[in-house]
Picture 1 (cartoon, rainbow, N blue to C red):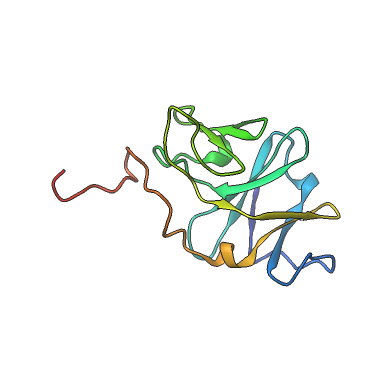
Picture 2 (picture 1 turned 180 degrees about the vertical axis):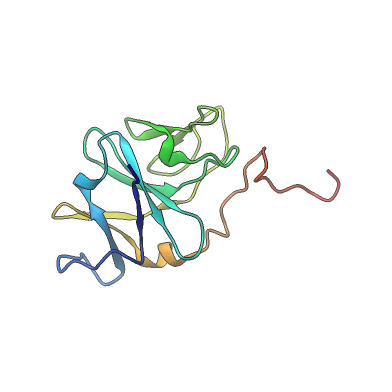
Length: 145
């Protein structure tokens, strides 16, 4: 089952909390202890997670370690385990938990009347400030490597 939704394809609900928010989906559209990917016209996808307490979080769908798809990870509590190397990422901050280091960009989330909204300005960004993975094919290498 494809769990990808395009930020451009979602309509603004009349119940939108404010003009600066983009409707993404209903909370019930996100599997409990699972995720949906939000495809963006510019930049990397965003993973929207739902835990067993119906809390909703959104982070860049890219582990800071080797760029693994966090949307395919295992959700527990307020964290997700990356499917590649089991790094634990805090869903509220996007940061790896000790002893690992690095962060995936976290996005502001609003839930109103069972609808999930993400900050429109953050969605439009390119995630240029995202930390490069520390290893793997997506990491930045210096000229001396």
